[in-house]
Image (cartoon, rainbow, N blue to C red; front, side):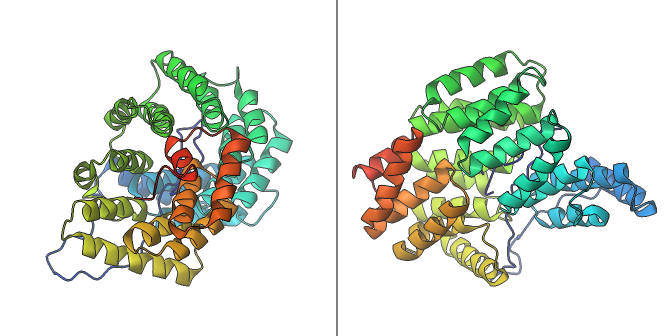
Length: 391
């Protein structure tokens, strides 16, 4: 999933933090547009202003603080700006270091922590909530998502099962499908989620985009061309979903449709994960803009390393492999990445880097993961079988 991750899909609106920090980039042309900032006259900013004002009057007022933090987390998802996560943490300041914080704070704190890949700390917060309230649906769904990213599928599946009958059917269906689709039951998971979505006519745009994106990812991994219809349906529901844009961009790249990726992502260069896909597309189509995109990414990843930030390892591995041609460095990053998270995308970049570096042990580890989990991923299976190559 992904942050570059779709983590923390929640009952209250599938709040996720999907952005990675970007370092400053100095343009070579004073006329170059670096970023299009959202207008402060938008409803989102007016709402934030109102919530900030309310929290400032009473900083220890729990409802005001959690409302403001929730709005900041949503802004981080929508805008792809991780600074909003820092603002969310600040809003929760009076309780941030308190292990006995109220449940709403613990759930928000876990959401922020998982977005920074502090997965164990996020799970610990959610464990605290669920010891107090075993039926807390938001905590169950968020913990299931984090456990899935860690590859702890049995525990995650148990949390999903506990949601059944307690919340609208689309939530547990998506939770279960995310796990079953990577543990040998992709076909059944796909069919079940399709049925649940069809039976949820009142699902809002965020929920439809989430479900359609997950369907598209399952189809993509299985080599099913139906993936495009799902990604397009998701875009119709929420055209600014950053995780969706990355997933659809990856599918287009796999189909050899790089020119469409440049059109899709040309205005999304503020987000490292999307700039990476744009640079890959620009390189594939031999566009002169590729050099500037690659230079910007190099600067951002260097700044990330200087900060000790490890959130970007999967994207950095792809950058090293496909844009710098440094297979050993890519493999080292991919190995470190898979120690923290084990999503299909992490496994794929590990396989690609291992194949490019000629590392039989790393390829064997990928092969073992496929056998143990039953993950159906045509592109990865081809690489470990020696039938595919990094491209």
